[in-house]
Image (tube, rainbow, N blue to C red; front, side, top):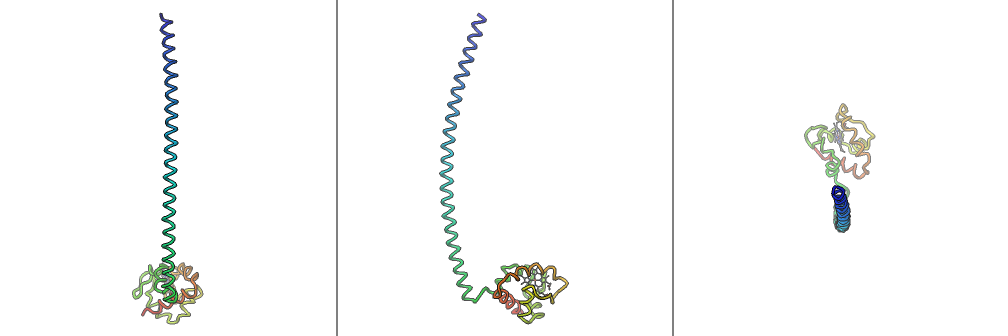
Length: 166
Ligand code: HEC
């Protein structure tokens, strides 16, 4: 009787194990199949996203082209970039106001001290010495790296703008 029970138990256990194993395999197969489908769906979505991103980028590039053209036209009409725009775009405005001293001297004080365009251009090209507030030249010095790299037309426009402030 005892042996019989043990045998039965063994059969049942074996049966359960193999049956369970079988269904596990199936479940695993199913899972794999589901994953594969999900992966495909993800890929398709990514491709669609990439395609639409590219379209948006192309659109942006086209817009940029139109903008550049417009800017080019404006620039040509104005005969080069205007000095005030350069003064703003290059961050000079952070330390210089037109008529009041801030971190740096007021532009009207710089204009009064220089008076002469060639001399001011010379300073902006990094070839002159500070004459307005030499004690604080260390604060100004890094900005000459920007103006030194500008073309003659831009440095001239910048100097014209500064000298125009009274
Ligand atoms: C971080 C603040 C700061 C910025 C940004 C700055 N400056 Fe200045 N600048 C100063 C200070 C301070 C002085 C006074 C020291 C001196 O005279 O060199 C000065 C002086 C000057 C002078 C007079 C130089 C002289 O002979 O003494 C000119 C011209 C000038 N700046 C032009 C510019 C231009 C153009 C820009 C932008 C490209 C600019 N600065 C950006 C702080 C700044």
